[in-house]
Every structure is written in structure tokens, then in C-alpha cells.
Image (cartoon, rainbow, N blue to C red; front, side, top):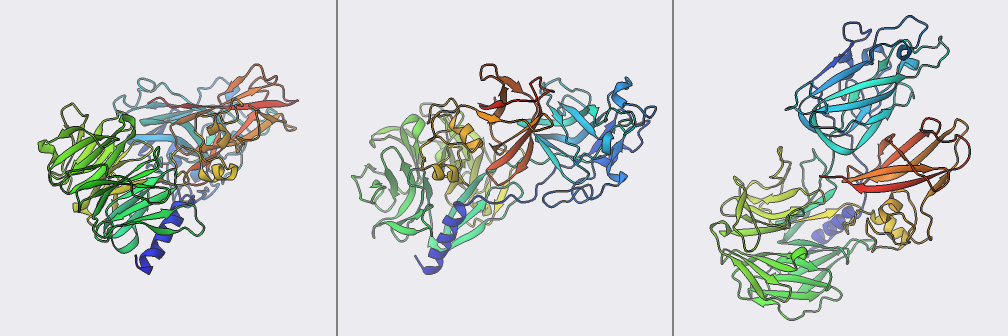
Length: 587
């Protein structure tokens, strides 16, 4: 490996090990807005959908651009002095039209109009098929929120706790910040700008091998540029060892396999295997046995090396003809090999004994391999046919995607999305998405590895927290200290899994009878966080008020609850106990 390549490998391992600060958010364009009070509104509702750069700053932290009335929707007044919501008037609402069904998981508002500012509001949703008045027809979910009255500048973001796909959103206001003295406002209802941030579910780093270079990209939506990190080597395969926290790369023309440590400071890239006659192609990791599996296309054999020291063990299988990629299907305890010379898929058990062979029209130029995380079925790409097929051994292959140009490596990220290296178009693409995301500049790309930023062992717990505790073997749904709190919840609350049982957090209300509780939440995850409060550690009250959300990095968000204890029918004096529960979101 030349000095330039070694230095750039250092950059790769360094960037993979870091949590990156989030870029400015991207927001959907709202096509139209209509209020149910439009005939008498003091300020029209169309002022609320001006969008980034016009209604609010397009840069973080996305502050409002002005407190002027041109950024406000305000209803008519009741007979001042009065309380708008005590007069029996129709609850003001407005319908937002996003133009087409969009994936939503939060609403952002800029709430300012003194004591007329909206305080409580709830949302209803309708799909394009439901129509503009079909709220609740197919989406029963209707979250409620309490907006803060914190001045004109700051963005408030409220997470739904789940993803909703809808075109229309109905926002209805049920209270404002009337002070109750009949003098200081409350006779109107006002609302500032409204926006919906485009969900950013891509948290993994894509590592793509290609002749003469290796490329990586942070998978944020909207970022379609691959950054070249290595030059001068003929890279073929890339695979992550979760237990070793290393990335392994094969270089067939040199007969070498490189290992990059993600934990060394500075990170280290070493030659793991050097075999002069070898032509190393596909790689796979057997974590349970501590073995690296390597296809040697020079000898058409499957070789295995001990991760601990690189020592070679007995060859596992032979008789191939230019094998491309190998996949360890842990769920089925089998190995799958794509053989481009034989145009076959070959299935072996973990001891190397042949279980099945697929010789089918779809395996012409077979290359990439992946396992569908939901169904357990195999997906493979045909480079020559430009297609991706789905197959379960013993069954009949089914074509999944067509019209691709030289599809090679395949991989699923932790969110269940399929990625394909489309070598003929020098890119990585997500072919299963309605609007595929394309990552450019992967010239004649081959293999792909997806590495979780800040979570390289893919257990949904941040590496920094695990390393600080010295507890790398935790699981999200485990309870290492047997205190009744999942390890995932401990991570969210910044707790410890080594400090003994506790099971709850004690809070002291402030002088206003409110408590404030913050926790870290997996950003846009497939989990719901449910907060419970108790006065006696026996009866626990579920809290339905959803938190404000602050994006901190590409992995975690800071969720902050401010709860008025009287409003949830708890005593505003004395200690209150909080407990966090975590549930998977139903798909």
C-alpha cells in the first residue's frame, strides 16, 4: 500500500469513528394552506408556508426571520377584553396540502403572537387517496402538542414518535396563552410559520470498493456526492467485523487483505493477509467463530483466516470458477457464493458442505448478495442482465428490479433499505424506493459495506456510551444490571448499566409546579419512547405530551419534556418519579 493510500485509509477509519454534527435540515414544500376562519382572519393563513429562506432561516438553528405580521396567521377578535376559547367560537384550524403523500415524523412551528399565541393543538392526517377531507379515514393517529410561548425567534420541533405517510395535515388549536385577567390579550388566536422536516433516516456510512479507489459517503438524504478516500489499489470487497471493530478490504491484484482498526488512536491500517498467488474477491465474517472467510479466485477456493492473528485454517470449499462474493446468512446458518464463471449461486453449510445450487437464467453474471432483514430471503444481482432477483433455496427465483446498468454489490441498512452498486452508472442507488436516492462517483464500483456511524456494532446503542461504561456487549432490549430499565433506555437517559438497580429517576418540581425531563432518543428510529410518572412508585401515569426535539448529531436527538404536574393531575409539590419505556413501532 502506498503512502498516499495509507494516509487516506487513516482518514476513512477516522471519519467512520466519529459522530458528525447534523447539517441544516431540509423541509418539504407545502403547496397550499386553508383556514376554517379565512373569511374573517386578521392575517391570512398563507403567510405560514413561506418556507426556508423566506419564512425562517434556511440555516441551523432555523430561526424566524422577523416578528412582523407578514409571518403570522391571526384570527378575528372576540369582544375585547375576552378569552377567545371561552366565547364558544369554533376552534380555529387550517389544512395543509403537501402536494402528494410524504413521509412525516415531526412538525416545526415558530409560535409568536404574545398572549394570543397558540398553546395547545392537535393534528389529523389524510392520504392523497383519502382526499382533502378524509382525515382519520386510514390514519387514526392524532397527536396533541403543547407549544411554548418563547418569543418570535426560535423553532419548536415536535416529534410524532412514529412515521406517517400523508398528503394533508389538519392542525386544530384548542387553547391559547390567555392570562385570565381579561386585559392582557387572549381575544385572538395567532400562529407562526409551519414546516415539516424531511425525515433523515440514513445513518450509515456507505463504503464502496472500485478499481483504483475506495469511496465513502455519509448517507444523509440530499447528499449525493461520494468522497474518494483511497487511490492506487484495486479494491474488491469490504466487510465490517463488529466484534473486532475493523473493516477488511480485499485487493485481488496484490494477493492481500487489509484491516483498518476503528478504535486505535490514531487509527491503524495493516496488512492482515499476504498471499502472493491469491486473487482475493469476496469476504465475509463469521463473528461467532472469529473467522474471516475469503474467496480466492486464483485457486477457486474458499479460505478462512483467524481474526485474532490472521493464521490460516483449513480451506473450507473448492471447485468454483471465478467466484465473486460470499454471504454468511446467520439466520439460516448457511453460506451463499455467487460464481460468475459457472453462472451459479452455491449454498453451503458452515462446514463447507454443499446444500443447494441455483443454475437459472437469472444467475447469468451473478454478483451481489444480501439477505432481506424482514423475510430472510436472498437477493442477488445479475450484472449481465441488469436485474436483482429474490430467492429462497428450494423455491423459484422472482425478479425484483430490472433496468439497472451493471448491478454488483448489494446491502441492506439498519432501516431495511436496499442499496445496489450500479457499476455501469458509477453510482450507488436505492432501487426499491419510490424516489430512489442516488450516490454518484463510484466508478465501476464493486462491493458495498454499510457501517453505522457512532454504532459500529449495530446494536442501536452509541459507541461512546458503551466505551465509557466499558460495556461493549450490551443489547438494546437487554437489562444488564437487572433494574427493570432496558439498556436502550439507560443509554437514552445517560444512565449506567454497572451502577446497580434503580429502575426510575427522581425529579423535584420547580416553583411553578413543573418538571423538566430530557433524554437521548435514537434519531427517527423504529422505536417509541413512553414516559411514565409516579408519586409513590406503585401507580404509574403514562404521559401523552410529546417532547420538543433538538437534533444533536447523526445518531441521537435530545428530547425534552416540560410537564405541568397539575395538568396531568399530580401534586405540584414533592418528589416525582419518572420511568421510560421503549417499544418497537408496528410496521
